[in-house]
Image 1 (cartoon, rainbow over the protein chains, first blue to last red):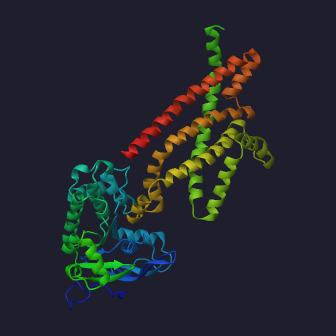
Image 2 (image 1 turned 45 degrees about the vertical axis):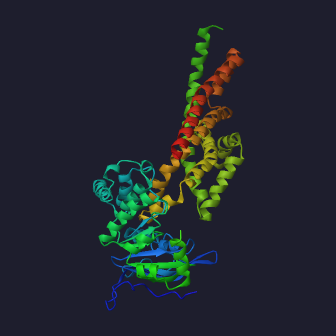
Length: 267
Length: 218
């Protein structure tokens, strides 16, 4: 087994002073019933960087991603947002978790829109209830974000009347409404057919272009190569290989990476 | 018997029906919030909350409703709490209703996918807001039809308040029959009144549960 490589940053030009990471995982271990789903992983994402995590199912990539907003409580290790520990050691308080999650947006594989609310209401709810914005301000922001993801016409429509791709774009708008410093994406296109997935990827490209810091667990190799600044390959709970996306994808060093990429490209 | 007589008997029974409906409203006012509270209690990870909730639910379901009524009306006065027949019946039936419906509420809350709570957490909302604004609205849609069914059953169960001398529909029919000796007619009329309220509500409950199932698969 290859050793776990140190923090990322290999994608940035040599000699540049290491900027504080927008988000950093330090020595993260997640244990389920004695099995280490994530085994002592450290990973930093620089401000404005898009970091893609690829790897086989069960490699711990989603679990690692979910520790960044403590939806998955790590067994040990720390998460730093903007160089600051997101929670004190020990069991985090509800207030710490809420503060962390207002800075870290997240999109899920299954969208998880609130089915009883319209698209605009989905985007308004947390603005009003978590940030304390007025309903009018929240609605203005919701409409502006729906326009940005190309769904201005769906504002007053329930999610069940939208396609999967539209639902995921609404979910992205919902997360953006809190003005997060970093966005987490957990296989955002895996539940979508290729055409609908493409609409979502287009929105994510646009988001990356505006300088949003993004951490993306994905099976979309083209997206990873085109959009990501840094690529991480995980297997069996550890980072096997990481670096510039093109070089990892085209010239993998580790056997495990080669085996996985061969399985992907041979399809 | 002439039509005029039937009409008179029917009108004589109506105040009893009114009392039965009042009892139903009262037991629902107690039972629905208590049922929801018990559902939250039995789902709690905290043993100090869960065990008492489980105890109330098991006692409420394990003891016949009539025994609960007797306990509240005849038993409690020995502890210094004396209640009139009407509130005593509402409390006894309300506790019994809550014990049964806590399971309906619990199932409804649990049927809301975990991803909904996760999305709420990921958006930095508090547990209370997530429960009130995300989980409950979705759970309510699921629990309304079965709750309507339970409400019909407990509307019929208000006839047990007869045993506490509450002048509800059955008791009114019986008392009138002891004076006019028309037992068969009086009790049949009472039965028709119970059924006249219960059957349409049951049909409504079934209709809304079918519509609900349809809207969820669509």
